[in-house]
Amino acid sequence: MPFGRLIKSKLAEVQKLGLEIDMIAPDHGVIWRDDPGGIIQKYLDLADGKSELAVTLIYDTMWHSTERMTIPIMQGIKDEGVNCKVIKLRATPMSVAIKEFWKSRGCLVGSPTLNNLMFPSVAEFLTHLRGLRPTNRIMGAFGSYGWGGGAVKGAYEEFKKMKLETVEPGIQVLYKPSLEDESACYEFAKDFANKVKEYHKQFK
Ligand SMILES: Cc1cc2nc3c(=O)[nH]c(=O)nc-3n(C[C@H](O)[C@H](O)[C@H](O)COP(=O)(O)O)c2cc1C
Image 1: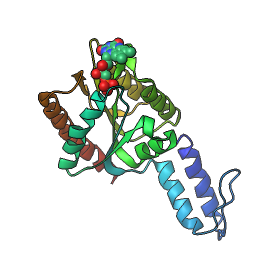
Image 2: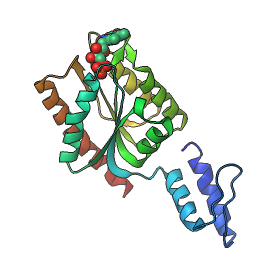
Image 3: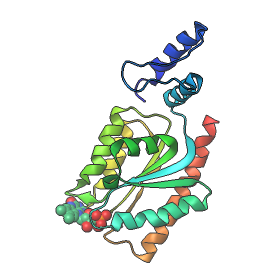
Image 4: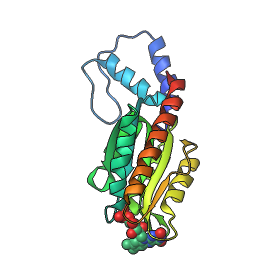
């Protein structure tokens, strides 16, 4: 992600040489002997930030209220015909969460408020992501809180530091979501899915 531009110009240089490539042996990592052309194409896709019309929900929770929000949110996204995958940070290696983020055009980040801030695992994910300098993604946030909140606001601050597109103001629920809150989550997700569809058009 962070070196996409450099990689694209370097690969263009290599392609100009017109060499037949049998094997890719990087400084570190695995040696690719099968289908080096396919690997180069994957690398170019990575460098281009290529992604699918899909939304990934990436969240964590202390007492399951934020977790409960993921169900109507996922439903709302799917009902708009957009694929949706849900990632619980504490059950997922960071590298997998980042890969799932990368695959989808849209991402909704869910966090409870802990001492006015995001839950630490969510903040960790966003710090990791920011270092990778993602582009061409549309973001939103959701979460449960008990009084003043702060997690959703904090997530948007991070999205802005990354200069990513956002759908604001996200959605917050006081403690455990009520039936009305679940309906609001569903409607929020439908709207988000439509914004993702609109945003995705420019990349076709
Ligand atoms: C240690 C602790 C600190 C909290 N700090 C805040 C806070 O600063 N502001 C707030 O609005 N809620 C705060 N809460 C309340 C939680 O955000 C609230 O219980 C929320 O529903 C938790 O969501 P979850 O079930 O997804 O973990 C705190 C809860 C705990 C346990």
